[in-house]
Image 1 (cartoon, rainbow, N blue to C red):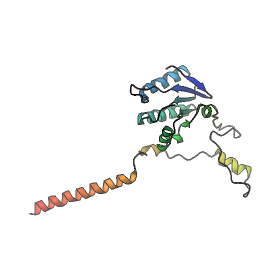
Image 2 (cartoon, rainbow, N blue to C red):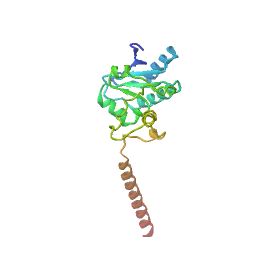
Image 3 (cartoon, one colour):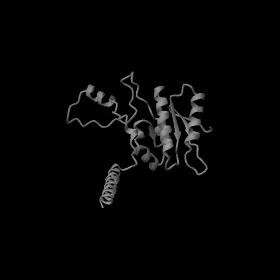
Length: 192
């Protein structure tokens, strides 16, 4: 587990690759465990996926597991994904709701978490622009909008986001039709 770097708050681990050049999730799990054991106070850990275009679903599962472990420490798991194709696939499966996805080392180094005990702390995501002065907004309304946590559906990972749900209903209709044809054929055979 060489080339571990410190980037801002994050301990950034290199991405282990298997012989065909794909991300090796099993080796990364061992690297993560070793990093946690060696740095028992580490709360912010990430993986450097620079140069990779994709990772397999076993990596997604590992990232979610590490997110849960670091959340218990009031920390975060992050991914450094400099390729837009990888960042897009991570977002498509909904991982941006749980883990931090950074496009550059500078973004990662600039990360500042929300301090729940200090309401004046810097938010960890860019603040969306509040409408211009055309509509008066009180400071308390703005503060409540900024510090309001997004609602996360706990069942979000129960669905495969890569499968088009409309195609599964088409498949169900076809299966029902085939089953009806089989029943009609059996009944016709028995009647004759």
